[in-house]
Length: 99
Image (cartoon, rainbow, N blue to C red; front, side, top):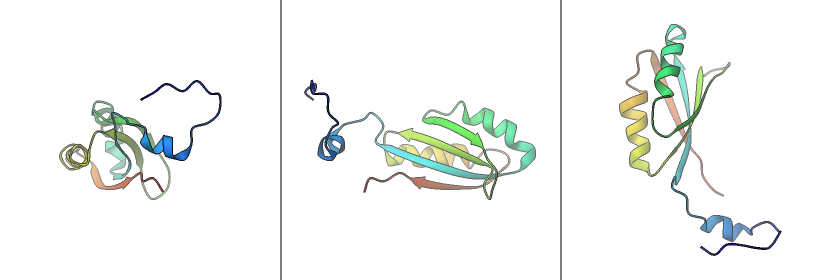
């Protein structure tokens, strides 16, 4: 892609054409056993693709932001890793979309 030298913002068309190494972004909302939250947070910090994880108040206990290369990688992260953690009761995945 050509480098821009102008000092004005990119158009929406240019933004949509930008390629990223990580094409899937998602928020994962986790309900967890409160006693297991510290160990869950530690495990999340080791998973590739996890950018942030925060303990929150409300109906969910942890909100995780992930960036992965494709839908398959997202599925493996959620199903094989997050759902298998001791103390995870539920994980709801919300994929970021462009509108």
